[in-house]
Image 1: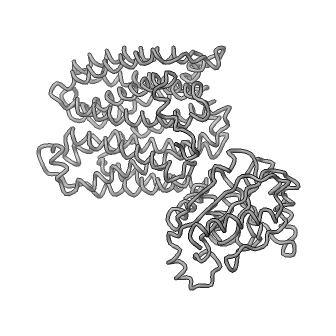
Image 2 (image 1 turned 90 degrees about the vertical axis):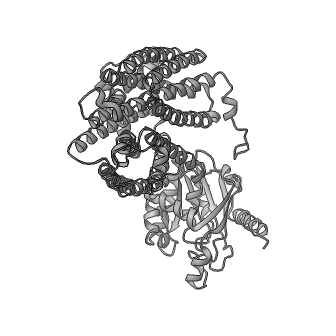
Image 3 (image 1 turned 135 degrees about the vertical axis):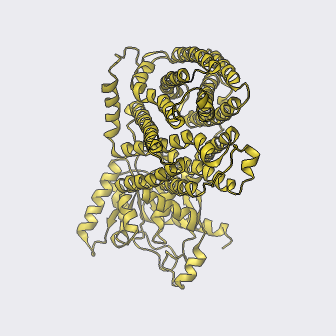
Length: 635
């Protein structure tokens, strides 16, 4: 069962015709891509001298760039073609194209035609750039809203598994004595199986059969990017995603030569490191759902940046001094004193990469205009591809200038820190959410109940008891939607809390006898926030509790509801009294020590009609929830 009590739809989808043939088709396509790419990159790194005198660094990065280039060139046009054509037919045609490309690739592998293989890599990238829009637009046409998360999760899981198995298979097969022949057979067989699977995909009508195709790649690309640029947070998130692909492409492309030239490892060691990097990304991505409490938690993005920089720098310092004349096999490498540190760096780079990329993708989907989402995704793919091509260009320039691969890893790790600081300066919401996430995952342990009572959209007023200076941060870290907090102006202005409050668009308020003008301004902001469909949270006591007991609720909530009759949710925070951030009179050091990892109960009640939500009724409801929490702890 899911946390909401609904049956898990993922196993059901995997046996239904509307999903299973499509899932198998996209899985086999991703598998074949990675067999082809990794076999070719390892062939160049370890056997390239047999076929050409060109520097293997140049060939490796040229290959990576040629696979990515079609995504930059053709994504905008591909999206139009897919929207205009019935999708199951489009996918079958794309899989037929894959068979033709793989037949040529098989011939080129067997004959040792290295430059033909590199040219075919461009065609393979072109085929993949066509399949991407078909894949992501097929899902919402066959799955209802309650199944979208399950369907997308399965596709992402399948893609990671396909990348992992394809990367391993490509590396292991090409290392065998008859490796080129074995790779050729696998590529053709998988392409045929993918086409057979596509025959089972149900018909998917075109949403725009009369669409007039704009064949001008440049104007259509510019139009897609313009949609993104119109939303500042989305645009900067896309740049963050693209930077991740810059980093990921650099690591994946350089690992084979890094393994051979710096670590002294053979093809088996390359396959191990590539596999571990992929496992790391998959693990980090899956952990995001758990760490974020199944909501879009952009506070994980700075956390991911820190890990990417830290372990990227450590990978430079972990490099051994290799003096051997023969390349090490897998067992010999694992037995080296430095191997565990390098393995941990590679795995954790992947894990923190997952923490970084998944929330950014979710934020783009959440903050984009639904009517333009497909164009935003197309623009995102174009910018991603551009950054990956730039990563190949930068690597070629630096490596040919005499920079070692380990030094290249150091350079991009430092660049990552600079890029992260720049983006977080422009969008401080990321850092604010990071502080909130750290608070509720390190200082406190929060047990949440009733989160499903908060509506997914639309305005509502939230009322809660006021125990500590960090109440708003804890609530913001638990509720899946952004919340506008009404805060006493003195708390709003406190150091550090002021940064969090301003970034979260909190509303400062004062009492009538303190600053009547500020009070009236606050009520106007509350009124506008509710009209805009926001959640507004108030603390009706008007001040922090001085003794741990509930203060009398003031009638300001009634004034708010009279002007805006929206649903109301009573909430309670239990367990914060006595912590360092409360007004408890115990010695501050003792409160800090006792407060670390304190268990906090956060409870949200079902909605109350606005006409029933008087200050007295809400106070009674909050008091009942606090009493229930106390009884559960035996008080």
